[in-house]
Amino acid sequence: MAGIGKTRFGALADRDLRSLAVEAGNKALSDAGIVPEEVQAFYLGNFAGPEFTSQNHLAPYISTALGMAGIPSTRFEAACASSGAAFFHAFLSVAAGVYDTVMVMGVEKMTCQPNPRVTEILCGAGDCGPGGEMAAGSTFPSLFGMIARRHMHEFGTLREHLAAVAVKNHANGFLNPDAQMRKVITLEQAMNGRPIAEPLNLYDCSLVSDGAAAVVLRASHLCGPDAVAVLGAAQASDYVALDRKPSITTFPAVREAAFRAYAMAGLGPGDIDFAEVHDCFTIAEIVATEDLGFVERGRGGFAAFEGETGRAGRIPVNASGGLKSKGHPVGATGVAQICDVVRQIRGGAGEMQLDRHGVGLAQNLGGSGATCVVTILGEPSRGEGRVL
View 1 (tube, rainbow, N blue to C red):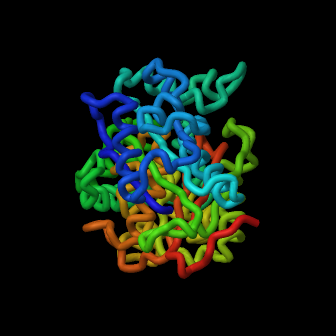
View 2 (view 1 turned 90 degrees about the horizontal axis):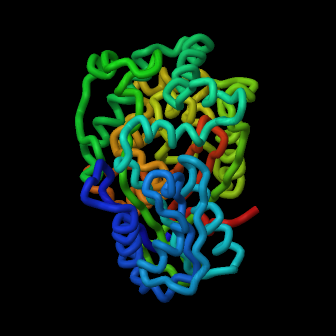
C-alpha cells in the first residue's frame, strides 16, 4: 500500500463523479510519490454510476482524466462491495507479478437523484426477479430490520444495543474532518429517531453520499518507508436473496472471507488491533463483529453496549465513524475503509488515532450478505503478505 487518497464524503452538489474520482486519484499518486505514467493498470469499483449519472464506460472515463491512457482500465460491480472487490483483484494481480504498480479506486455520486430514485437504484442489489424480495416490496432497510428483529429474538439483543453502535460511530465521526455527519448524539436520541423499518430508525441507517477514495498498490521492492503491507485478502459470495439463507443472523460470505484472509495472513481475530466494518445499518456492525470472530455469536450487541468496540475498548471498530457517520457512497466505501486502516497503521489519523494500530482489518459487504471482501493490513514487519 504505497499511497492513499480520499475526498470529503457528503452531499456535494457542486461536484460531479469524475471530479471526485480525479481528486482522490491525484491524492493517491502524490502520496505514493509517483506519476500517472508509472501506473500499469486501473481498477474501478462503482455500483451504479450509469443509473445515478447516466454515464457508462466509467473506468477509462476516469483513468484517462488522470493521465493514464493506454493501460487496462476495468470497472467492478458488487453492490456496496464494488471497490472492495476491485481491490481484491488488483491485489492478486500485483501479488502474482502481473503488474508492479496499480491504482484501485472507488467512487459514487448518489445525491444527484431524488431519494425515491436512490432507493429504487439501491434495490437493484437485491433479488429483483419474479417473486423476489425486492419485487415483493422489500428495501434494504426492511431486510436489515428483519435481521435485527430476528437477532433480538434469538440472542436477546436490545434496542439499546443498536443505539449504542450509532452513538459510538457518531462520536468517532465527530473526530473525522472528512465525515459527512460530524454530530455527537446521545443514547436517548439514538433510541428515539424517526422510524424507518422496525426496529430500525433514522439513526440506525447509513447516509446517501457522494465521494471517492483511491489507493496505489506496488510490489514491495518499489515501496518507501510509509508503505503498509497487505497481509491477507479474500472475497466470498452467497445467495443474493435473504430468504435463501439458512439463518439471517449470520452471513456465510463474511465468515468465509474472514477465514481465508486470516489464513493468508497467518493471524486470527485476536491478532487484530482495530477494524473498519460495514455498518450500513447498526445491526450489520453487530453481525460483522460476530462473523469476524471478535465476539461470540449473539454477543455483538452486548459488546457494543459495554464499550468493547469503542475507541478504548478491546477491539475498536469504526474509529473513522463508519458508514453511519463518515458516509456511504456505496462504490467508494471498500477502498475508503482501506484508506482509513492505512492511516491508522501509519500513525497519521489525527484525532482519530488509536493507541493500538499495528494490524487492522477492513470488511466490505455487498447487498444483504451476497458479497464480502475482508482485507488485513499491517506494518511490513508483521509479515510479507502472501497468496495461498
